[in-house]
Image (tube, rainbow, N blue to C red):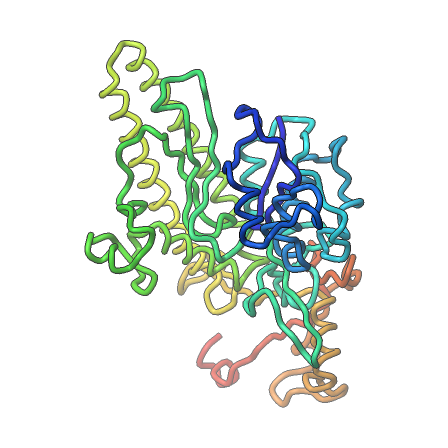
Length: 429
């Protein structure tokens, strides 16, 4: 099987003759149209290349689009690699620095790509690659791969770009499809479908033959148009938040991750993993029941099983993501991290300040100078020096390419033991 990703940059080049419908299909007048509109001159341009005629690759096309294809190729090839693709060879092209080194149209993975592997790719942010945006100062203290100032920016007359990873906040909806040609037609196609950013949303399995969906996933062919959704009394629009809309629930969860990446991302990934496992079990049960009904000739009843399964999958995902958002909000409120503590008498919990890596703290000091420095030898009038500071073990500085990820063990960050005026006066302990 071949992998042939596409990321908004035309990739097909020379493909003529296109006379075998089993391997190639195109508009009969594709060359004529290009010629009549001045896009193509056979005498000057030579062999007809679809990409070079209709969508010539530029720096932006390579960096924002083809770089994603490069990453997909790299991921599906895996550690074993692919005979028809070398990531290092095509890196300059994906960087936009050598536009003449076009990548192959497809690669041949050495092993089958699973739904889980495809989902990880669709949720990726160039992790571990040259393009990884989570390792420079733009990622801020919690190493977010997201950037909020668009794809292009400039300073002092020089132009720069932000990376455009596969997992993006700009996603409206997404799906991964599987095809089983040897089952009844209503069951052949399954879409693992989700709303908003693939990286942080739930995906639910929907059969092509299902005739219903849960209300939180129902768009009634409105294509997200607010007026249409309002007229058809669907929950939520782009400007009207609704906890009954899957799109809004995905946004709510994702927004917590965007601002608390180091702490919240792993929590959401675990929730996705658990939900996928739950939905996979329910999918198998529904397919077994529907298959039995199809074999007995009860097609209407079998389709009803698929439809009921689609509704239940949506309900499960919506309930799970509602609970997840509530948990994230209570866990990371006010920039703190809340942990349960049964010995604490007020809330049965305690809140801990976030610890940033030395690499990030050093960037702050480099930028601010001595603005935040505490003069040596100056003690608080209400505490002794021993009460004021505590230093934990020193950790190595950041890793490759200015990496400022927090190490797994405590960093050298200074912890403050705050003593309130009420405590001094004996009002509180």
